Length: 396
Image 1 (cartoon, one colour):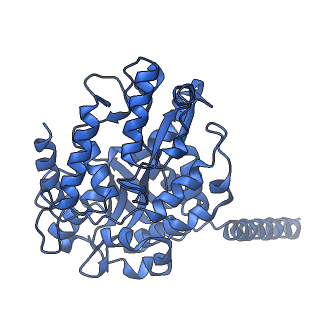
Image 2 (image 1 turned 45 degrees about the vertical axis):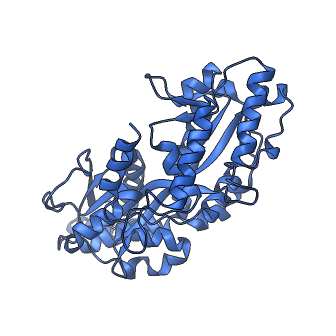
């Protein structure tokens, strides 16, 4: 009897050991790593909270014993003496503010050049330039925002205007005049989020940086003047619909007063999800050029992730970085499901980017990816927050 009990215990022990081994092998084959432990703290601009949380959820499926706290920080851009005071490991900030952080708080950031080295070919020189300082890379470009034109198909069709014939801003203005004269209306042809919105887009289109090689502001440069003159020309026709109320861009499109406007790719995704009734009623094209053959590709804004050098959690932070850089399937899903356009050029090779988008009956993702690849690289200066304040003040 005693021998039988011993034998039974031995069999149970072997079974448990075998089961544990099988589970361990299964987890290993599925990429689960329970050995890596630690904690990562991330401060995120409110516009990218859901985006980063998606990465965190997927990362934790592989690394269940790494705790990641994501904190929405609406004070990231306020003047401060030390950005590491709250022991953050990473921060997600607007692309245009990145150089300000890297210049003013260089000692607080971790050089991740080795981490990103295998993936450098996935980003444009300008994108990497915006997350670099003194020839060291301190972050990764996350997403960008190519800009397009949208047109109300019904309105342009009524006036027999083919949007492919609108190649310059003068063509655009002429088309607007024809529409308002033919339909005896007072349609608007540009939405203005704020008074400096169009200026920044046109300046980007002209490939103008905000400072020259000597660090002097370019607000009185030839291209700056050219942008201002075009805005005045469009404004003189009473074509601009300013945000003078609580009405959003989507509401103005829905009401029908806005016959055309510049849109970011984020706006396009919102239109598709929030205005299903506009399906097949909108056309998409490139922004008109300043002259025939002039640049029509514009990409601005977007977000970068910067890594702080707080001396802790380097192994877990490195694993999270590698995960974000490597998981291109997730980057594609975040674009298709959340509308966040990836900075990673490699994603544009995906089959989904070459498909017809039913809502517009056009290959608009292919158009957007081509715009992103060909848009001038704008390097935002270290004093951009100060410059932006002056620009906004100048337009009010």
